[in-house]
Length: 590
Image 1 (tube, rainbow, N blue to C red):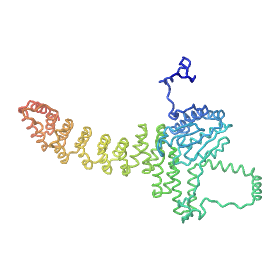
Image 2: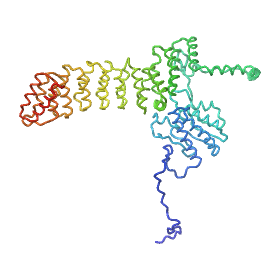
Image 3: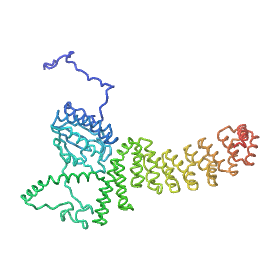
Image 4: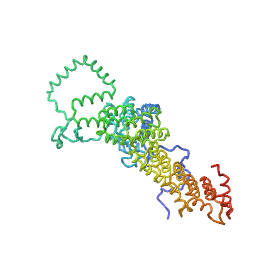
């Protein structure tokens, strides 16, 4: 049937359907943060420009995390982003951005999506994303309006960089944005109903007795000043009359306070506080505050500040009873991956400061240093970490034992290396556990580490390796056992040689056991070696095992051993005669 709708036209060159162009294989792939889902309509120019700037801002955070805020590459990228943001606001402003943990949205268009947007909440990779950093401290929306200046843009980026490593620090993004006093930046923050707690007890109420919420004044609730409005105006006018005289003195006092090192000011404050209030509760609260100070300095990789804080903590809590648990938790919660990235790019002196700090702190810093050991891509850093662990746990290696169950084989191997460097009888139980590890590389490291342990303590661990299927591990164990032979070692090797399973073992294993037997045994091993030498009778063939048995007999160097070889020269099998003749030619040379 003919179609009379009038809308259909025969295909012509002008209206023929055009297939989409093939993608250019040489084209540069977009950033992961720009892998958008296909939309039904094209993104607006404003959204595209904002998305491009946000990708660079995220790169600025990554660069600063790895290299530091004051490094040349970080400063160069920041200088480029400042005028770009100003131009962006002038061209497309006002810009209204809604912030979620995994994305940033402008209107109905997504302008930033985290690379790890599908990562579960709490995943460290997600916590380092730009959107998460903005959302973490309560920011829910940002607004940039026209008139935005380069000074404001530079301050905004400074705030962002200082707040990015937010774990265990006192830098709060929303607070810093508020303190910056932006004239052309607006924020929407999450409203929270804050319940203030007594810092000495951790509960609402007074320092001594916990009370229901609302039944007693909280410690930071100041009473309202009951002053009439006219009196307040009169007092303000009197203050203004004295402003010219008081201003210079105030500025001088401010400058003097700013020039005083923070560590000295903190120590003076703590000394004054304890003098006025020597209660144990106050001491515990001050100790907790110093732990927070240490964690803050560590997160920023400010090792000199961390050292000063730890020295003060040791003077305040000499036994560690009040602070060790809190310090362990605090140093275990910092973002060690960020610290390691920064450490890999640091010079030798900066790395040495970290290792010196860890040795000073000891067990509470173990998780931090193991994380550096696990994540560092620089062999120099890993070598420094193992050396620091050796010094820090030389007196008590037991905390290292917990890391032998770590699922990362390279971490366990490095811990085993540290245990070997410490040496002594205290490490033997931990090396025995490592010698049964599922990964052969860890087992070999454990056997090597046993070389630093007294012979009588390592013997039992080494003997368990005689049944291993790893030839390298067997050879290392036999070499170590042969250093100080005794009856138990000889009996253990002889039992393997005489076992019905001996023939089923690989040839190199049999040769290694026979060679070791000559090092640890005397004529008591001769019957077993003679049996192996003559095995096969008339039809005996030349083999590495037969040659090894003959050489082992030579190394016994006893009259009985020579008699066995001379009798073998008259054996019916040519293979036996050749093995004996070759062995006798070596007599006196071994």
